Image (cartoon, rainbow, N blue to C red):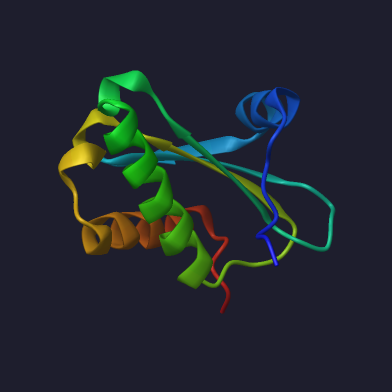
Length: 109
């Protein structure tokens, strides 16, 4: 079964406009409550991160790190990769994501 994802541009824009943001060297997290029974994820990796191969690898790493992290239900979470993310391995990206989720207060207790 597919993980719930943010797919439309309006969902991303709504997260940016109405949500809060946290960041570190590799990632930016936008979080906003969605009043649904499930948390949805969106991933954005721009061209400054690298070519298509690098961007797709980054998205796969982010999706897997989000899949194994326990997050409270009812959030729209957008993760934006920064340029420094391209030189990060899976474990450092996962650590960065977990730290941002903790700072945002969306981790399962």
